[in-house]
Amino acid sequence: MPKRPANKEADKNKVSLAVELGPLKLKNPVSTASGTFGYGQEYSRYIDLNRLGSITVKGLSAKPIAGNPPPRICETPSGMLNAIGLQNVGVDEFIHNKLPFLGRYDIKVIANIFGNTVAEYEEVARKLDRADGVHALEVNISCPNVKKGGMAFGTDLASTYEVLKAVRESTGLPVIAKLSPNVTDVVAFANKAAEAGVDALSLINTLLGMAIDIKTRRPRLANVTGGLSGPAIRPVAIRIVWQVHRAAGLPILGMGGIMTADDAIEFMLAGATAVSIGTANFVNPDAAVKVVEGIEKYLVDNNIEDIRDIIGKVEIPG
Image (cartoon, rainbow, N blue to C red; front, side, top):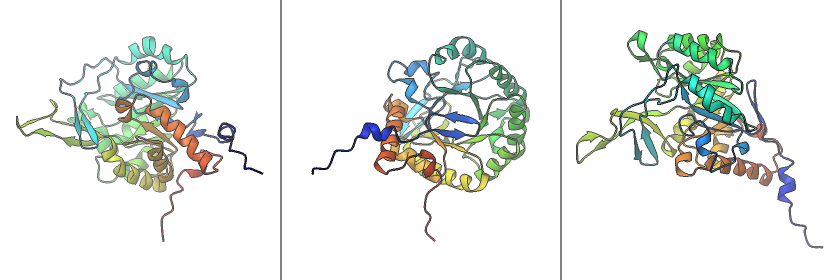
């Protein structure tokens, strides 16, 4: 008797993509990285937003910010540098004119927030806490603390604790700390974030980089330096996720150069509970949906019924 062909559609119905990023329950582990997907509406003409587990919106501050002067982006080998300067519409405009659109979709909304002082972080967190349709806060601590000479919150352990503790006390929403990789020991900062009471970690933010035009002898970015993202940083991100997963005990939203489902699965094997797609959105607007579909296919092809069974399951020899 000839072998009956596999019913892939039926097999898809048998696998579970649902994950829990702390108290945040997601129907699948794929989100979008802040700053690469606008406020969601910009990409809605290209993809079905319902296919994603969550959307992490462009970073929000207490007041609108115009950002840095151009040029603000340049391509690099296997990646890109950006120095947008956290341009955004401000938290009030987001709540009143951006957030209602996302309410049409069956998707969790993660609001990325930042500020130049602890008080600004608290203000934005409190406003979003009262907003209908926001499901979690991702706290960008790679911002300058203007009261301490411009030192980034995320590169000082005491400041990291201070700002994350303040946000934690300002909201009942799940709090995800987005940590900087531009430190000596990311694990120490992850542990300090856990001490402050956050529910999860985002790893990693961009690496600090620079590019020079050899003809003009001038930096390619008006800001001189910028954040490096894309496939070039993926091995660094994988290493950090693996290290922090073993040490900190918090769920991780992994990011850094994820272009395909295979990349996302690599992050999850290293210890990420969920993943964010960033630079890939500029290359292919439906990259995040393709990652969801590819993860689902991987589970079916490997007879894995639950995506959670692969989290942190990298096998280290010896």
